[in-house]
Length: 102
Image 1 (cartoon, rainbow, N blue to C red):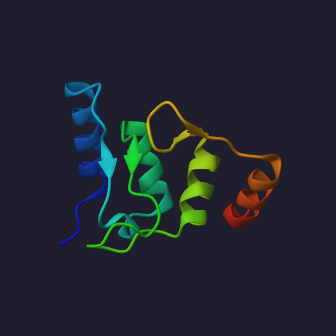
Image 2: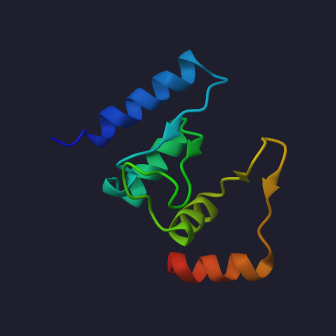
Image 3: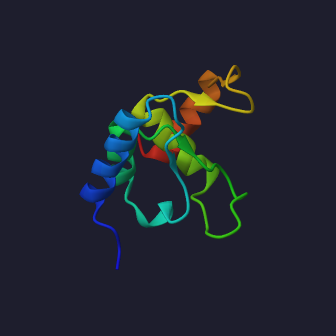
C-alpha cells in the first residue's frame, strides 16, 4: 500500500529538524510521487536525490524531468563534492522551461 504523501512530508520535516546537517534523500519509488508531492518533500527538508539512471533497484525519473523540476522550484544542484555546483546556462534554462511546459 502506498505511503500517504502527507505522512512522508511530515517524516522528512522531522528528519530535517532532528538531523539538520544530514542529507535527507528521496530515492527508490520517487517516480510514484507526483511533481507536487516531490516539491512538498523538498520544501519540507529533503535535500538530496539519486539523479539519472544509476539506481539499480528502481527506475528514476529522466534526467531532464528532474532538472526541470529542480529549476522550477529554484533549487541549486550540487554535483560530485559539495563545493561544485551545476550552473545553468541560458540555453539549458530555456530548454528546461520547454521540458517543464513553461
